[in-house]
Length: 279
Image 1: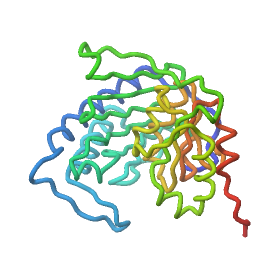
Image 2: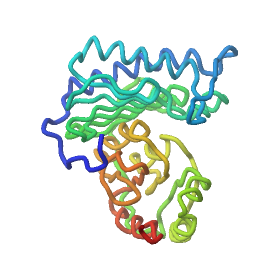
Image 3: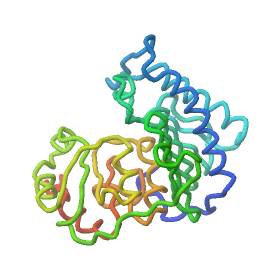
């Protein structure tokens, strides 16, 4: 994948692709729910010093096996097992986004499943069984959620970003102070936090889904991979928002994420712009 992804895919998202992604999420939930807070959970450290559990690997293996059976001509790119195949249609997987939370018993984690066509993420599913939540969206098909806490029938409801158009009334989730520090943008984060009404660091996929639901106006962080973001982008965009990198590129390919309700996007990008001299 390339950060210079085209603005639109050559083929739109299909209801069949979205239905498959939702079935894959069901498969993932059955595995991850069983292993969450398990006394015998196995955790090792990968070469990049991030943790991985037996649940991460089991979820991705199960999804890959089902995709191989259902979409044998599509390629797959996952966090734990890399890339398989070459195709304009690529499934992008993060089996457990928020592994550190998962292994500590914190319920803020999810399986992220995306389909990109010609480098454009057109289907996204974020499934968080420990929160009793699932969000999904597909280009031209809308964005939706289910919430086990307020809707025990399991019926989906559409979601939409907020209509707040003034930064002074906006809520921001910046995810990690350390991440902004390592990126050399603490000054920009300070400026942004001073400009908005309220700041929190909800973290992981939840911040972006809160933007899509209209509970936040801005979510942003650095040091991300495509599998951290690809599922988030179609949901935010179909909910009426914008999703791209801190440097202004659309989509999940730029190594950082800025999601907004759209009305504040350009103003946020201007505030957080990298002001270091280029080499």
